[in-house]
Image 1 (tube, rainbow, N blue to C red):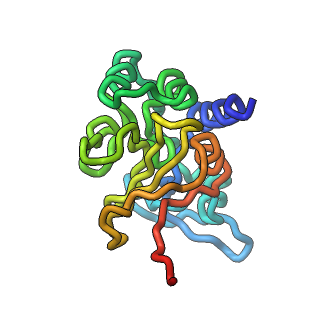
Image 2: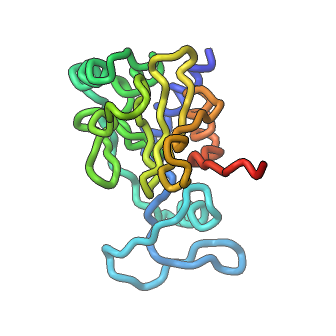
Length: 202
């Protein structure tokens, strides 16, 4: 039941073209009443604001937010090829999202072939590396080489973080302690944060 709620929530956000954590708004400022006042600017100029911020909501109320482009689902072939490359089936919820809603592109989520990529133009499948733990699929890119992975080999589709900037070498992979369902639910509710490793002070 919870998986169905998360699926429907993501599908609704994608259908409403409200799926990015950052939005493009037409230049302006908040007045004393919190309303967005447009400023003279070239027609093609946009500012980036965090989704849900006061600026975003005020610009939205003033019809100063550009709609995001529609997202397309993945092909069955692309998802099947991802599972073959990984050597494990995708978690049912992720497979369904890819096939019925979007091939990545919502929040930090990466796609399979033909879908959303990281800043190097790599899909989740392109990022697979035989030197990394088996069964982990990188499904989210956060910038600065930080990724979130879902464990497709273990029970519960648990999430893992990868932060090569941690200085912890082989320990850069770490369990996040939440399932894919919880992780996606956090994104839907604006509570998802990138994985972060902090050395144990002891």
